[in-house]
Image (tube, rainbow, N blue to C red; front, side, top):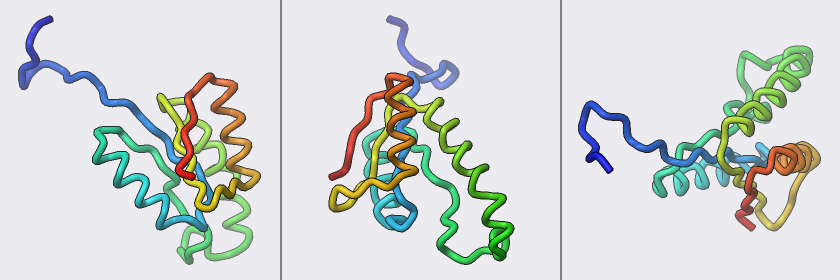
Length: 114
């Protein structure tokens, strides 16, 4: 096998997507830290609608954004090699269940933090 040089592409690290409730935002961030330190590319929820922000300041804005974010997260699962469910105390909500089922349909490995 040829040796890798600065000009040659490196083998791509595995891509892991984090799934879980945004109420566990700190745990999601901690999981992203550990996965990154384990040499994995991390895809994660990019917005926490439970924290105030001008993009979703009104209920109408939040209602328009939620389905966009839900679909975007499924596209992240499409890109990922595996799924890590961040589920403190074993809790899994409805959206996360849907994401797990989607990952299983794609035959993606699914791991759980708890």
